[in-house]
Amino acid sequence: LSVTDPTKCTEKFGSVYISYKIHSNTSRSGFESGAHSVVRRYSDFTWLSQELSKEFPGVIVPPLPEKLTVGRFGEEFVDSRRRGLEKFLLRIASHTELSNSQYFIVFLQAAETGLAEAKNESKNSSKAKTGTTIGWLEGTVNNLTTGAKIDLEKSAADIKTEEIAQYVAQLEKQLISVTKHAENLVKRSRETALAFFEFG
Image (cartoon, rainbow, N blue to C red; front, side, top):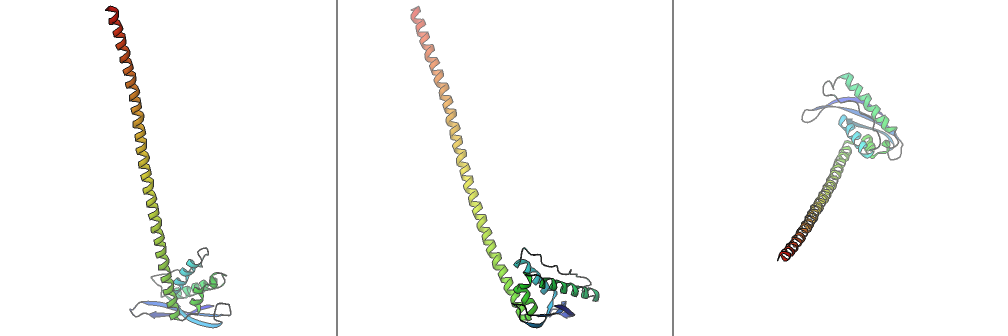
């Protein structure tokens, strides 16, 4: 497995990039046996790295060489990146799980049209997962909101009940006080009546 022949290319709209030839020769199961050569650019390597990270969230995917915006077409930097990309692929190839990924197989052996199709499929899959996640989040938020409303209503009812209980307790105290006051008035009236009777 090797990365060779860095070549400066120009796209339709004038943007410039470096392409690399990737040579592989394997008889491993899942791969097409024999020698293969494909042309890839840095963004293709980035795509592979991202897809492997999503497919194997618990696995550390080997790092890519750094991306520069200034001096990225210098001979030394291009060769350094080529060696970094080759090391990236060799480390994936030596990993039991990562090397069996369909994304890795497509990257090494598919034609450009096959790689483009794989990219579109993974993009659509990500959108579908995002939509499902958003739907789940919305449902969760709605459930939480509904639960909060129920709790608020219960709290309001509890508060009202407590207010009524306090009112009844206060009213009971007032009734006791009025009853005692009435008893005192009755007692005083009797005492006054007796006094008049004695004087009478």
